Image (cartoon, rainbow, N blue to C red; front, side):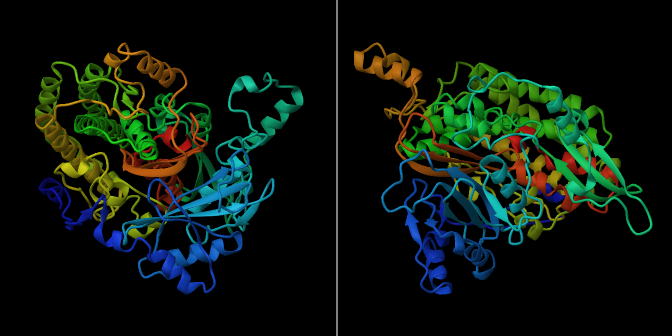
Length: 610
């Protein structure tokens, strides 16, 4: 249900509850096999090849020639359709042994679809053969497929027939090769020394020249020339290294084309070379304001693959740290958003409060922004003495500060004038474009993975799902402000109900074993040595888990071939589809409105680019 405070700020109430069974709704459990039955009725003679997966998501192999009609049917032909293309990615299968019963293939394109009506996922896998295969585009079925298909082309060299603008998106236009193919080097030491001869330098300079037609823009209208304006890629104006090419008629935005990739660091490629546990610190650098919440999104599918169950204390510690980082991230958003639309003071107050959270995090984890403190099977160490006083002081302190911020920001007439009615999106638009998290809930949809599909023990906690109705910049602010209060409720429950017991699972694949056991016998010492230096061997399988991260739904899709590192690691980052939708809600507005929209979305460029 809505909280009273959010209702006061914006008169929009959304109520609803869902009975859950094992983390999924009872209706979804009953419907778990229905998509296959419905597909069989719509496509007589179609033989779907099912595949078992560690995450329990219904997974089917579909032939290339049937993929597009099947996807269209799932999107539009069902009574309760799969309206969201949650993710689209690919796998280079050439270095992996084919399992019995699976189709022959060199590459696999993976479609991960989400139905809110069913509270259910479905995963379709399309096998492709050949060195540079192609399959039909689905951009006319889901507009959000545009960037996902470009990313697959950029990273794997897989083409999409009928795509309106198939070109590189994360790598420079002059890049040679496709980085997520297995033959592409994973380390700089595997590549030759960098050289920049004169002809290469000239080619690079030529590639930087702006040609509107290459961006799908027109140079002139019927009676006037249009103006093209670069916003970015300086950091202060765009919350990161982002370039937006604006096509203007006077000060009115006719079109906006985001250029991303400046922050791309090959996070998914690095996942293929790191062991399962040494990759944990890399996750902190994705949504670098989310801290350990990045660890959680990665570790949940790892633990699902390995069959690891956490002790209660480890679960509650994780939840407490995640919610503290949610508040810290929202405080950064709150202050910088206010600054974007002209208010200078709030950012200083809110960063000061964020420092109080970092004081708690540092006392518990030893680090601040990037503590990398979660481990496979639990956390790095137990809570230190005095942690409870630090947490109690903070949860008693912040509510009054948030009330004060309501007065100086949310009730400020200038702030409202800059945000109310600006950058509005409808619920249908949000779902079509893959919008999740607070931006989706600002459209009036009460959906939160912590409630609808409880993970990491969230079903034990009492909290509300804040929503708004107008879907504009102000509504997005309403939701995030109230989310901080709900996170404080969760943290207080962790404080008052912290269970005793171990902070880590005793499963043999947890990394590393408990320190006090390592000197007991030589077998445990060897296990410790191998776990740290070599890493655990995670059983073969695939799993994806989606969590409610600070920016929206964050999911890691992991594929193990029974080795010490992932065969394929995919990061479904919430900011990627959010940034893709920017032109949709910016057209027809003024240039200053674009900055308000950017601030309200709450994105992180490392989350976009990975």
